[in-house]
Amino acid sequence: MRKYLMIGVSAFVLGAGSMAYVSQRTEAAPTRSTYKQLELFGNVLDTVERQYVTPVDDRKLIEAALEGMMTSLDPHSGYLSPDGYDDMQDQTKGEYGGLGIEITSEDGVVKVISPMDGTPADKAGIKAGDYITSVNGDSVLGLSVNDAVKQMRGPAGETVTLTIAREKSDPFDVKLVREVIKPKSAIARLEGDYGYVRLSGFNEKATDELSDAIKELQTKNPNMKGLVFDLRNNPGGLLDQAVGVTDLFLDGGEVVSQRGRDARDIERFNAKGGDILHGLPLVVLINSGTASAAEIVSGALQDRGRAQVVGLTSFGKGSVQTVVPLRGGLDGALKLTTARYYTPSGRSIQKTGITPDLEVAETRQEAQDIANKAWFSEASFKNALNAEEGKARVGKHEPAEAPPAAFDEKKDFQLSRALDVLKYGSVAATPKLPKPVAKVAEMIAKTAPGAAKAAAK
Image (cartoon, rainbow, N blue to C red):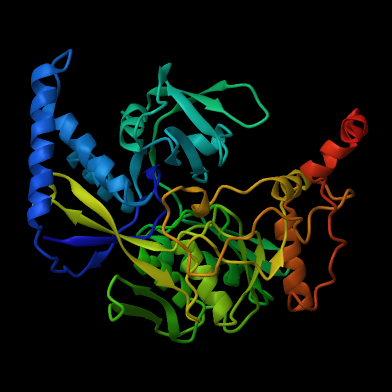
């Protein structure tokens, strides 16, 4: 039996997946009470088969029970049907058919984690945080992620209509045409004397594509003064690619460690050396959509002092999932959380995320939202693994920086500030902007018409 290691966010991806080989472990045998519970399960199944109002599909019942058992553990564990397991293997190869959306389930509602760059979903304007309520007019409310994905998948070239619920907007329909997705992991361009490269995921091609993109920039401008590395809305992917990407910028040393149930069960991953930038300044851009493998990279570069980090606190997904094929995949597979990962300094970022060296909101509205509500993150899941004792994710607050009134928000303010950090040499040396004064919800309520009269009663 083979096992695979997954470090992407908890989602079925109409986009990229993630896995790598790990060793097999020996587990304790079931106890007598376990066998009694299995007998109970058999009795319940038999009763449903004989007495339910309409005939039932045994396979669907058992698969639903397996999925329920796995998802009760944490948001990222789950059962993959044989078809789902085959789909996951195709996704990690970086070429597949679909819409290009990474989704998860939140309280029975399908939620978009991120559209993938250049895909039908991205072109149609679907945004992180959107809810998908129906597919081709059929409701997906209450469905598992597996079942929702089945409704969205199909032959390339066919039209799919998604009904989207978005905050501060009435529900609306979006028509997309399925494509064979061939995501390009890395895109690059010059920003004056500096380079910019974006990595959208960590599939099998990520390290090679990133290396090629950076070399292309160096060819275009041999005197390039530094690089902005954009990991915003990067949902993660393969662990070996996270290590490989980090290795591009480090001259050896630890990148990440993973620790399982046993305190002695520690595995460390190290860079081999050879900085592709030869020491040029590096700034990493992150936000609340930066997850898992992308957090490994940004955390390692921050801990090792190789990069300054600009943006917003990352998603906080610090757990590792092992995919265990059942009967060689003929019965599907289990996706089971088996370890936490730690940055080189020993930080577990589970729930808490990577904190940027310079906190910058992308828009004035985003700054307003951060001041008034908890951002969607790993900590939003009710049954997420706990953070390390005493640690908590930053709550509602006024971010350090946001676009000033004179800034054209059609432009990328976070990128602008990242380039400023490169220009001035460090976050500490970069002139700070006045802290935005957000309209906190409590203050709005106090100043609303009639609030003073109500308070006087």
